[in-house]
Length: 213
Image 1 (tube, rainbow, N blue to C red):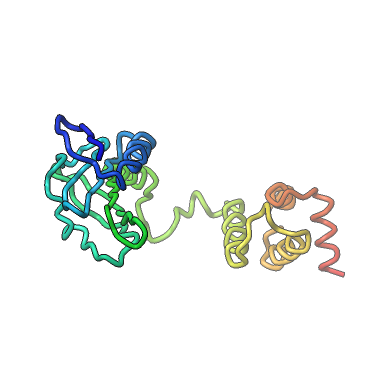
Image 2 (image 1 turned 135 degrees about the horizontal axis):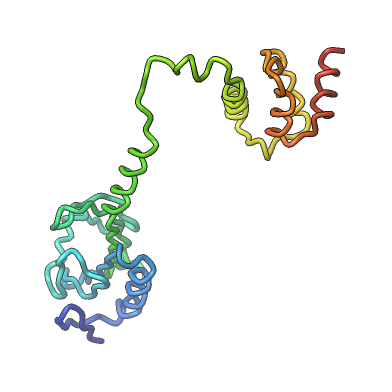
């Protein structure tokens, strides 16, 4: 038996669980300060190791395994969501540790995701555009650039490709489809489309001639 001291408490760490203590510390260090790692001993159903504790768990306290709905046949439990004592949202996952076929411990990783939710809300607010029935005609009446952009994005999404991944045949077909929808009617549209597709203007014109022949 080895002993571990964390949070001003000392508990006995069983030999079969001692090797997991550095794993707990490594995970907590990698995701510092957002991850807390808790090691439970199933023989005593107590918390025997803590790394970066922020949930006010303490060494030696009951594991309260019913909180993670532990079953002997489980291997990985979760991810599942919890709420921290201070209201922060926690994303957790637990691994059942076994010696041969016997479950001897549970290693729980608690990730504080409240900061990420705050960032997501900020980004959503920044990129949000107030909805209106239609785009201002004064701004978009002659904006063939946007119409071409939307057409190309819709075209490649439908085929599950990106512009960088498109073959020569696909680019030729896209040029043909754009022409069929009148995309080349705008001044300098051919030059713009050639830049978007990474083609020379001469190549684009050759594709158009083949389509017309």
